Image (tube, rainbow over all chains, first blue to last red; front, side, top):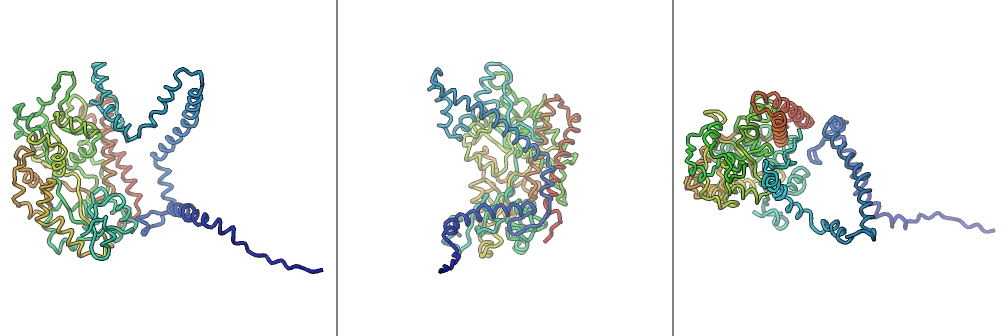
Length: 160
Length: 404
């Protein structure tokens, strides 16, 4: 009875195939993650000048009222998007797809038309409409009401 | 000299220069290759002063300025934005005194003599007849001054003129100085209530130009560089505007302020330091370029010995034949100091926020009496002071009193 000797041979070919991915993943994902973690405990003045500050950055963030306002706003926006915007837009999409809807093509055009105009152009177009006091909207309101006119402007919102 | 765009071709032989933008700001911190010389605005430059002195990306030119005699020759307030912890990090480009530009055609048509104006109270009293509804639609459409609670730049010009300062001599925040509260209260009464005298202009630049041409505001605070910008943007106002010193807050007080600022800095790591220094000096401090800068942009030189040059006395047709250069120079020694603190922009924003809040408080409570508004102004500034101190205290490099 002859015995065959089995030599375990390292197969490099899988590594050859996943190597480029691993390299890129390490350079562009793993290392930045580790760097971010390190940075969280440092204060820097460019990459060459750093000092360790322990948990100061975290305590600063947690004790900042504006941070919690931002967290709250983000949560409201996320919940609103998830539970209001998404179902409503899905419902409207289903409605627009309904064959018995009157004026379906026109409504589809209305819904889609904003996508045909770039946002910068929209901003430029709406700027003279919503301009304070002399904007077209304010002029129209003033003509209609005869009052002082003037819609509140976001520019006037206080952040203090 | 080569521009930053041709950096590669000339990298070994000649210094390169560039106007500093956000990417250069990153380069200053990161040690990435940069031009040898760059022109940099104060808002960006001050960010370089957040760290240890020895690591500031600009070459320390303090000794060079002293040895060359420029330290004595340059108008002292012009150094302040470029100094940190007693060291100078660039050659000042300007003084940027602010004058008051007014629609002389409208004022003279109304038969008003502005020579009797010395203070802001005089200004509003004398020009009061000009604030009116010009087209009979029931709304006032001509106001006396361009200023608003949302316009932080104008607020800061007035704040500096009034003697306001975000920081004390030790560099500590002092936003809640009681004088600052009094300043805010006075400004709010210009903006809202029965004594309102000012307005803002449209955000849309084309509409705001039209408003100026239409005479929606009688007067505007105008730095020398802004005068140059007006000539380019609003040639239609040529011959219809004149300049005068800013009205003072109190009789005998300062008649000017300051806005903006630029320096030329040398990259600390430049291999061409000497050439860069010579280039920078020629660009900013030579007589030839001083004249070119003034003729092109109306900006006066910070070098006091240049102030006697004849071109500053030439009548300026845009300003109805006035000697705009000479008028600016007369105010130059009196411009307030601009802080170099990296927290100055933040302080400016906090002051602006306090002003907006105070204006809203006045409107909501229909309180337009100055004395009644002072406690709220002080409360808002106390709050802003805490925030500013908190931000400044977070910087471990500066908190350690770095002198390195």
